[in-house]
Each structure stands twice: as structure tokens, then as C-alpha cells.
Length: 532
Image 1: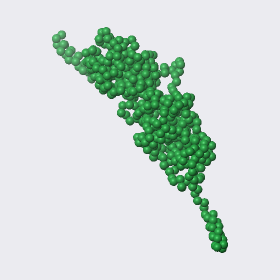
Image 2: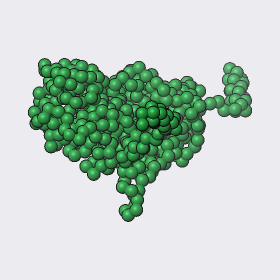
Image 3: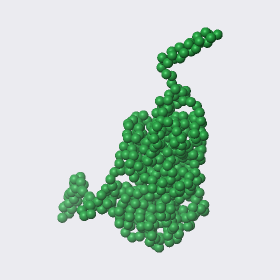
Image 4: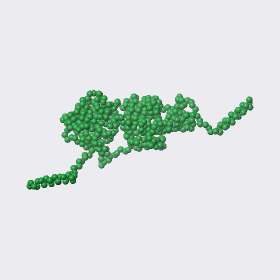
């Protein structure tokens, strides 16, 4: 028995020596519990979700791969890259954050698709690896698909559009809201759980929002987890402005930054009333779109006035879609362009009333200063001072018993009536309030003698004068006389915009016409001579 045990002991010893001669097998990470109370597997799922690890079985993961993934995640979180799973790292993984992966790989690129590969360029740039999906234009459209119940619609718009302005201030980009059935570049959604894009929200905390890189379809869209409690101007809840500012960076083509002070860092840092884009954010976005072009400067003595560069553009517009008078200024609308004309005929492009239809067909200013803009089927109302869109708009024209496709509209201060023109008819609304009422309908040609229809625009000014515009001609209408005033129509572009008056070239008589005249004289003389 003693001999048998000794032999067995020697065999085990020899086997152990042989085992040491072979390469060491891959170390399997032990499955245990973390110090935070979460399952140990949580951090592996987290590392995989955000691109630090590929989607493989944990049994195939080496210690080296695990440590490198942890180090990289720690760099993005702004903590010491030890490569060890400690309490600080687990706390980092439990922070609220953006749902877009920090590192793109084959596992997650399908979840957050990019644009056409033909527009994709990979380059290492400082703290980030950039893939360069960009919009191939400078005017980007957006649309609110729904709203969160946490805030007023006006508060949501203000927060999101301030985020747009931050990026616009450092790039050539401009952003325009669309409503009327057009497909926007960026759709803005508030959603919960599985909302159909392959990236499921996880309830309160964790993922706050995600966005998609520029491209067709879902490209550029921003989704906010509506299980969060979004707030504005408060240290309580999740700040909507900061969240939108970050997500919009993705919509424009930016990845996450490992600079923890940057807006594009992946983790939510809480409300900061003085938040600004970091130099890292500005450098990154300007590598994609370039810096904001310098504004034109004007010499004080010999140079023309500041609007000279704009005047030729406005003067070339043959007819405007709508004209609105507000507090001494005229707002001109043509297709997607809009201009503001001051009392001294200074003409500038404007972003006022940008939260509205892409095309304006008519508009007017109410007695309380509210501006109303109308497109084919709906109307929008704007706050008198801020010019921000009021809550619960747009509203259908048919809710007012008005037809679609209004040609022009104006508010008559003297009678407190609003007139809506379509072809040779007009509707009268007493004290426009947006309430469904029965409107009176009249023949425009019977009431407004001498006006050519259909109108392109109409407006009234503070002294009560009423103007009708068709093409580049306008007429001032006298309510007292019931007709056009003397010396009208006149040139709208010259009188209101300061455009140069076109000089009419003298008619040149052709050689053929001269020959015909001479021949007529010859015939007349040949008939008269025998009588002399």
C-alpha cells in the first residue's frame, strides 16, 4: 500500500511538471459579485454595450483584453486608467449617460448606423477617433415628432433650439424647423423602452438619450428617454438643454470625447447654468464643417451701408409669398428665405419666426402684438416680444372655418377685423382669437375697387394704412374713399426696400419702321402733288 501511494504521488508530480511545459491557457475572469451590489456580469455587459469589448463569450476573454477595456473606459470617464475593476470604476458605470457607444465597432455600428460609406473617412484626432459622417449642406431641417409631458412645449423648444444655436455659432450651419409634411433631416422624439430603432431605453437613470449620425432615414434623429424627468434651469432632474446639446453633436457627426470636460464626453455631468462648448468640441465640429464665416464689415466713410450686400438679392425677388408688418419693421417671406426690413430700409436676413412653416403664404400682426403666420393648411402664433412659437401650434385653418391656401391676410386696426383673401373672395374675422366662428364672405372686387387679384401679399401699418401687393407693384387703399389712393400703384421694391429704380430705355425705332414711315410719306405726296 505504501509503495502504491508513493508511485501515485510521483505520477502526479511528473504530470504537474509536464503541464508547466505547455503555454498557459487563457485566464477566465471569475464570476462573483461587485462591491456595488450589482452582478459582476453587469460591467461586462456595460463594456460590450459601449464598444470597449466585442460581443463574445466571457469565457473567451483574456485578462489582458479585460484590463485594456477597463483602462479605456476609465480614460473616457476621467478617472485613473488602472485597468482594474474597482469601486470608482463601478460607480462610473452606474452614472447616467448617452446611449451612443464610446467606441464604434462591428458589434454596435448596426445599432447606430452611419451614412453612405462613400462619405466616411476614419482619422485619429486628439482625444477621439472620428469617422466623418457629415451633412453635405449647411441648412439642416428638424421637426418635433412629439413632446415630453415634463415641460411646456415652449420650454422644450427653447432648450433644444438653444442647443442648435450653440453649434451654429461656431460653424456655417443653420437649422430650420419644418412642419408641412416635409421629411426633416433630424427628427426629435421622446420615447420609452423599445421604441423601434433597435436601441432600447432602460427606464429612469442609465441611458438618457441617443442620436444617430448624419445619413438618410433614421440618420441624424435624436431620441430622448421619456422615463427621465427632464427639467430646464434646475439642479433637479435631467437638464434637457445639456442633453440636447450633446445629442445634437452626434446628429452632426461627432463621436464621444475622452476629454471629460467636453460636452461630447459620454457621461451626464448635471446642470451647469454657465455651460459652454469646450475647445475640444469646437475643434472637432470645425474639422467637419469649418469655422463660422466672418460677418461682413462696413467702412464708416466710403463704404455703402451694411445692407448693400443683401439688397440685390431682395431686389431680384419678383414677388413675395407674404409680408408682415410688426412695430415698424417689415418681414418678407419667399420660399424658405425671410428678410427683415427696418424703417431706414436696412435689409437683413433673419431667423425670427424660425419655428414655423418652411414656406409662409400669408401673415399678420394682431392687436396684442402676436404674429400669425399661415401656410397651405395651418397657422402658427408667436409671442409678441420673444417671437417664439406659442404652445399647441400649428392649428388647422379649417378649425376657423377658413379654406386652405390663403393668398394674403391683414389686420385692420380701425375696425378690429382680420381679412383673409383667396382669389376674388375674402373672409372677415371679428377680433381674431383662434376660436371656431362663422365668418362672413365677400367679393373682393366689390369691396376693394381697383385691386388686381389674386394678391401676393397684404399688410397694414400702425397709422391704419392698408397696402395690397401684387408682383413688384403695391397700392395703398383708402377705407374712407373705398378705392385706391391717387398716384398708385407704385414700385414696392423701390419705395420699401430701397432698390435702385429701373431706368426705362427709350424705344428705338427700327430701320424697317423708318422705311415704312418714309414710304407712307412718299405715297401721300404722290397723291397730293397732282392736286397742287
